[in-house]
Image (cartoon, rainbow, N blue to C red; front, side, top):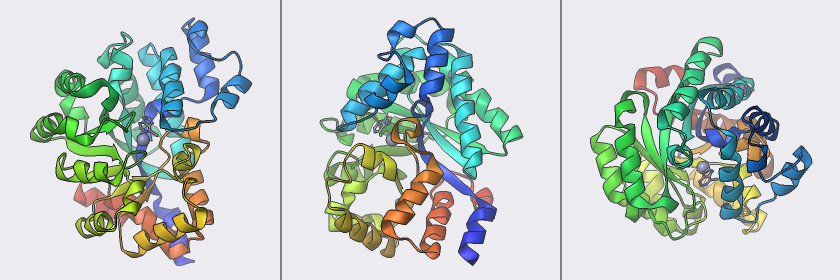
Length: 332
Ligand code: ES4
Ligand code: ZN
């Protein structure tokens, strides 16, 4: 059909992707061996890794995600991880990607900001030339480390400001509401960064309100708990504040399955029909069992989406992106 052909011809943007969450178990072992830090990872074999990736909630995933980062030491390590993601993204028809990186996860282990940053940016630059993928970097603050550490991280990043499109907020959500980071986001806005925040992933709809009203974010990452608050949904639709939804992540971390499937399908369809700007993304694909195409396939099948709705989700990925208007328009 026509919308299908259009999707195939234009491709898609990915807007919610933690680069550290693309570290596949095979590369994890390869880097552990290369850096002689095999004792730092909590697994002896690929089978042990696969068995461990069986998460009960957000924190049980985060514990393993941070543990895996221990093998990332040199600039080449960050390059190799990022390049591996970009090749998979290209295979999934991603033409533009906005990737998260968590500087505190590395600086807290003694890996300099510049080492991580340069490895990632060199791979992104190569992808522009070799894979025709454009990209932006969004630097995320780890909410469990608090606002002072976030502020120090923002200061540390200012020399790299021209190469960082936006700032975000991730990690453990419950007990770390957006309101704690108001000052940090105010300064980031003043410095010209775009603003996003994880909210309503595990935390309540109230956290989404805070991200919108107090942090003044341009997009909400996840935001699926908004479904529980009709006036919030109406607001997000009216303001066209995009949600970067990650279906396989939600399923793997059991947020979605807490709702009966039929109810979820029904609610998501109501949101789509209300015209909410929903986008589909992969979050931490090495941990959640699929890259972005697998997320579209899963959602399309579980919701029984028609080709027109699928096309709209692809359009949304560009509309919600931080591409300049003239570049964005080429994809619409
Ligand atoms: C994350 Cl799924 C998810 N949620 C919150 N923070 C994160 N960091 C990496 N993946
Ligand atoms: Zn995320």
